[in-house]
View 1 (cartoon, rainbow, N blue to C red):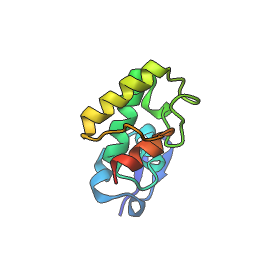
View 2 (cartoon, one colour):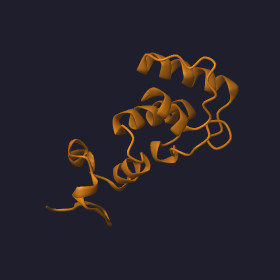
View 3 (cartoon, helix red, strand yellow):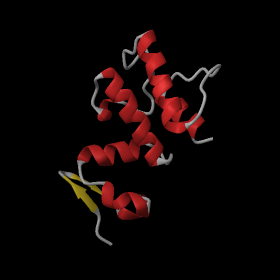
View 4 (cartoon, rainbow, N blue to C red):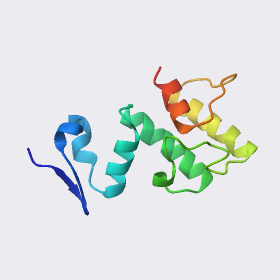
Length: 111
């Protein structure tokens, strides 16, 4: 079983879900996969992409532990827009939920 190589990073395939193996082509892909901490990597990727696009960030800057306001610099308006985009994307309602981090959002969606 050949390891996954991207730049100077090597990841043993036994640590990667089979469906994710072909998508790990860059160091950023591997970092994002590892950062997802075993969560549904498709959900993590979509959530990070929505947040990054709204806040004009690169997806690698959006970590699972990132706090939306404090760490990523979202304004109140940004947070409302992100909430609306995520609700439409995933068909969930966040009203009344205190979701501060990216991990909080992903965990709520994947419930």
